[in-house]
Length: 394
Picture 1 (cartoon, rainbow, N blue to C red):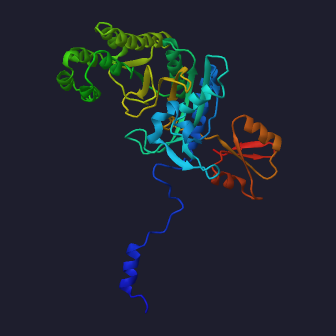
Picture 2: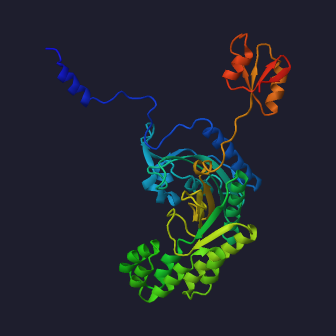
Picture 3: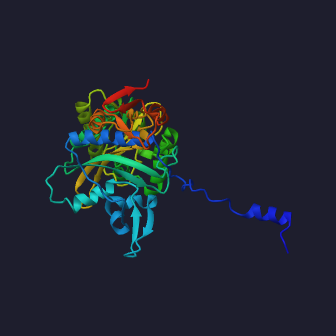
């Protein structure tokens, strides 16, 4: 019995459409020109700034064994890690969602005997289960960054941030704001003030929302102090002036003073840098143990990067800053392509080589065309080289 027209229609409604070879998994995209060119040259610019300050480049692998990566600093990233099985060893592996835990591992193992301070830089692709920011859709992200391992001081924190500021300036990113926080401060204050465990979660939610009324309701004897801390949030000089006036228990004061000292050290190194301080902010990568920073540009909500103090896998102190090239390069003009020179049949090879050293791209003729000018224009060339003579087509 043959299919009826109605049967063919019903079958076509239930069958999957033909698979397109251009289709990619959600959150993954092809980078084409000029975006790929802008990224490559922009990353080179960032890495050049890092190298000029003595940060030597390393290249950790994209995949590590789960047991290794999710130990130490990487433990906080389990929910953001894609897992695959190694068909050779049958052990589980993870695609890195962040490079910093790999630097923490390397510092404790491969370069444990290298003299400190240890300065390293990196650039590479990371893969996350969910986009790193609510306004983004990409699950494959690019990271570049630096890590300073060994010193534990406000000056070390400020060095990392100041190098990041110079890199962004060199790249041409305007109106950057460095927002400094101290994630351990509020938990330390609640612990030292003996706020009951049953109230801490609600109180921290209120602080996270910057809800003064809820803080007053939940804070008990600590409410006035917490509200004063909320009101201290803002530009660095305003915040520091207010924070030094707030009475705090000794341990909490010591934690907060580290933030204040880091602001002073960074201002010394970068007098004109825009800085803000939020003493009650405690979000961020869960492996951070001290002063943290998030980078924004005025008028946009996307993070340009983030960093802070943490412990390597052997509890050695370290601090770092990770930048987001895929965000940064949307804020600067695309990198222009090299002007192209069409090499007509018989073009002089030495002259073509000289043009390449001057920044031109040369396109060799693929056929013995009798109309090199037309072929050059078709291929987007601005010049034609015949023999040793280079002709401008404009």
